[in-house]
Amino acid sequence: MADRKDEDVKIGEVLRRAKSKGLPFGWFCLAFFCLFYCIQNHNHRFGMSDFKVYYSAAQNLLNSKPIYNQAFGQASGLYKYSPVALLAFIPFAILPYFWAATLYFALLAAFIFMAIKKAQSFAHGLEPQAKTSAFFPYLLLLIGGAHFFRELHLGNINSIMLFFAMLAMELLKRGKNTSPGILLGIIALFKPHFVIVLPVLLIFRRFKPFTISIVTIVSGALAPVLYFGFKGDFLVHRQWLLTMVGHNAPDELLKAPNTLQRLVSLFVHNGFPGMNAIVTVAAMAVIYCMILFLKKAHPSNFGGNDFSTAYYLCIAAIPLITLTDTEHFLLALPVIAYLIANFSRQNLGLKLLIVLACVLYGGNWFDVWGRTLSDAIERAGVLGVGCALIIALALYKWVNRGEQRVGALK
Image (cartoon, rainbow, N blue to C red; front, side, top):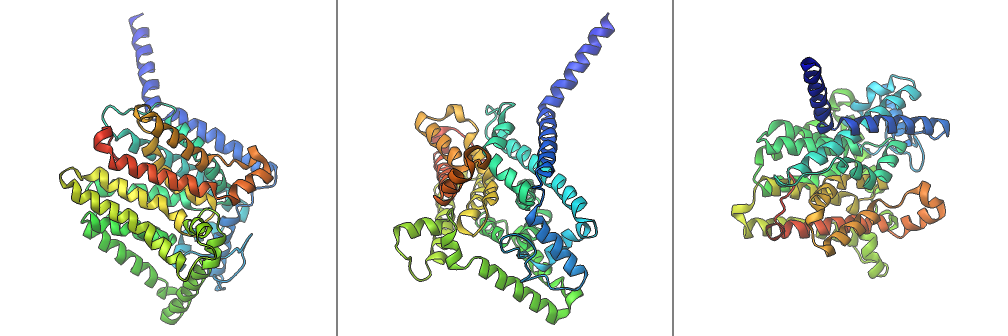
C-alpha cells in the first residue's frame, strides 16, 4: 500500500513538472497547428506565397538564373533578402514544393511556440513576486493570433527572426559577446531593419558584440564572391539594394496604412520633401533619446533589465517605420508580454489602455469580421495605432517602474 502511495506521489510530481514546463500548452499548439495545416490543405489555401518566393529564388540560384527582379509569387513576388540569406533555403529547394512547404510550416509552428514560451520566460523575470498564470502563453497566442496565422499562411520568416533576436538578448545578458554578435549580424542579413538595435548595444557599451555584428554583416556581403566572383557579387548586391529601395519607396510607404509615415501624412496634406526619412529618423531618435535620458537620470539603477527593455522597444518599432505586411507586427510580442505581466497590479486607467491597445493590435480577425469589415479596419490603420500605443504604454511603464514597483524585461 505504501508503494502505491509513493507511486502516486511520483506520478503527481511528474505531472506538476510537466505543467510547469509548459507541456500542456505545447500539446495544445501541436494539435492546433496540425488542425490549421489540415484546414489549409482542405480549403486549397496551402500556398505559402512568401515561402514560395524563397523556394523559387533558391532554385534559381542553384540553376544559375537571376534571383532579383523576378516575379516568383503573389503581389510583387520579388525576393527581397540578401544573396547570402538564400543559403538557408537551399535545403528546401532540393525537395518537391509541397513537402518543402510542409517542412517549413512545421518549422514555423515550432518557432512560434518557442517565441511565445521565451516571451513568457521574460515575463517571469519581471519581479520575484510576479508569477504569470498557466493561461499566460494562451493569452499571448490570442493577442498575436491574427499575425501568427498570417505568418503561417504566407510562410514568412518573422517568428524565426524574433526567436533568434530573443536568444541573442538572452546570451547578451549572460555576458556573451561572440554568439549574440553573430546572431544579430545574420538576422540583419535577412531583415536589414534589425540594424536599429545596434545603437542600443553602443548605448549600453557592448562594443564587442556590436563589432562582431558589423563584421558578420560585412562577411555575409562578401561571401557570395565565392560563387559569383567580385563583379557578380557587386552586381547582385546592387540589385538587392535597388529592390529594397523600390519596396520602401516614399509613395509605397504612404500607401501602407499602418506606418507612422501614413499617420503623419493624415495631418500634413501631401507631405513634404523627405518626410518619410524624417519620420523614421525622428521615431527612432525619440526612443534612443529616452534610453539615454533614463540612463543619465538613473545611472545606479540602469542595469541589464533596462538593456533588454530598450532592445525590445526598438524591435517592436520596426513594422511602424518600414513597409511590411501585417504579420511583421508579431515582433512586438516581447513588449506585449512586458505590458500584460503584473496586469492586476496596474491602476484602472492603465489597465483600460492596455486592453484597448491589445484589441487594436490583435483584434482584426478576417474570419470573424469578414472581408468587407476587416479590409476597412486594415485601411484605417488600426493595427499601426495599436502597436504605437503598445510601445507608448511600455515606455510609460518603464519610465515609472520605480513608482509602480515593476521590473523590466529580463
